[in-house]
Image (tube, rainbow, N blue to C red; front, top):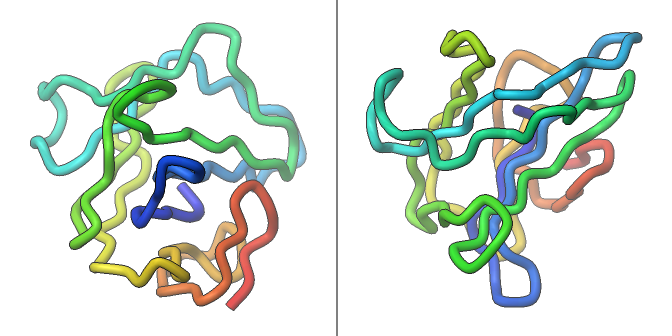
Length: 129
């Protein structure tokens, strides 16, 4: 995971951005995303469809909308989100705080270890402060 936006609207719903830091395409078929419902063994909020890949050094955005796409919403007051691979191993985790409508929570620079509040929202693009 690379960036999280939790103050979505009808026109721009919540989303979670994945970023492939490698120089090769990555197959993310069967990966699962969860939010504050418990760790492995809980029902995933979304399973990424078979045949889904992320190109080298590229982004994949999971739109988190209760009416379509992933089918769940992120809490505007903050919560935990994590990603499991197809073998149910937790491969990434973020506990994001309450955010303003003009903020996201992400890694700066892309792929960095630590997370921080970002004042520039960059869905599907390089993160900026």
